Length: 205
Image (cartoon, rainbow, N blue to C red):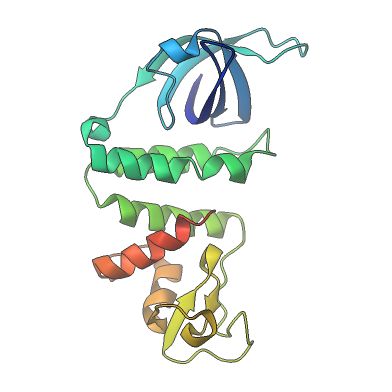
């Protein structure tokens, strides 16, 4: 079974508890001597087996192997990856069985991570996630004052639109945001505009 490690926390002296996202579920596992193993790290894609699924205690991870990507040795890319993937634990913590969307989203992002700007990948992945969950707010009225937004638009968490003056925030051209919502691509956006969208994602999924 393959999955992404969404979180790891130490228990006792050298044991660990890990939350793992697979293509079919999000589950918490126990790993004896997990603190000794570099494989059991946030964001890693691992192949593993499970034992002890008797319901009396946490199932246990065993036979762990790491499925690596070339960009893992790039500290800057790895840092952005960690910041992105740790957002999924609070977002999925009350979920058990799920469709493969989330796993496929992270796998697709990981495969592109070394070839493209990671912040662009995060923004494109996030708008896909919002679309999948039915949370794209593509209306033209401000969420705060409920009046029409004209040329410039600011975005709240979850990419909810608002007037810049209502949010006391920087903004992007309304047409650019509309294109981003429609195409789920950032090709038409400048790097500083992508950075603006990225910072919103980092506030939480």
